[in-house]
Amino acid sequence: MEKAPEDWIGHKESCADALDTSLASRIAAMLSQPFPQEGDALAPLWHWAFFQVPMPPASTGPDGHIAPGGFLPKSDGNTRMWAGGRVDFHRPLLVGQRAERQSRIKSVIEKTGRSGKLLFVTVEHQYHQNSELCLSEEQDIVYKAPAPPRLSLDKPVDEAQWSNSIEPSPLLLFRYSAVTFNGHRIHYDKPYTTEVEGYPDLVVHGPLIATLMMQAFLEANPSLTPVRLSYRGLRPLTVNKAFNVEGRISGEGKALLWAANEDGPAHEAEIEFKENR
Image 1: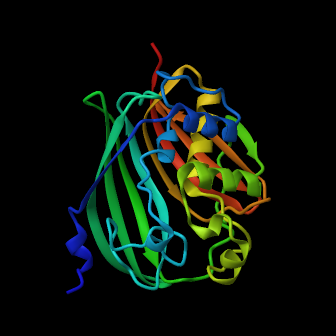
Image 2: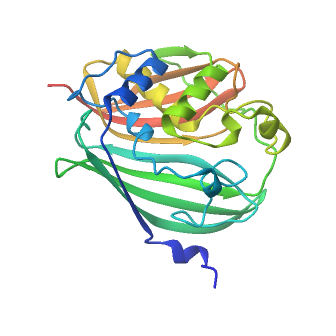
């Protein structure tokens, strides 16, 4: 008998990783950052390139994702996307040292939206290294019926205190898919992306956008350390169409981040931070 969506709540998965220096260096090369050495702190959000459970092609679905029904719930006929999440930074993960991710399905909620039935899945992750909790995270995953994507958003963009311009090339998307072992075809297979999922071009990874927003914050504020990040996607960004990752300090210990282009905002986030000591 097939499980009901709510039966997946509490489902668990774990994955260990050595946080290999060579993979960390590939991430650094992709993002034009200094190469980390063994024992260095892993940059915030680079952990998304680690702790991947390798699966053979037979275990993937037609969209290139690992087929649901293992750790994640099934939702036949629907597309799946990472819509946002929250990360608490307790202490840095260290490059070249073994760490472990422990995950569980925290909630599964069915709703009905403009495009039909939606399934919202929240996954909780905890990352430990040397018997200490380094990161706590929740990821929001949405299953929805295939529908034309929203390509613009009529919403004002805040005045920025810092801004980095990003030119999302096919090479950047390919490299991010490679370092994260992400097989979702919308990031590299243009015929599939345009003909099956209805996007105008290859889609920039949501986690990559969050990583670039974080990088811009750190470059503009080297004396600040992130404590918590909350982020969400508003609409997709596509390849070869420049966008800016920007932000501003919004209050004591808080900053707003966003990614936007001429078609309006696309991703937004809030950071809680502390002063370096």
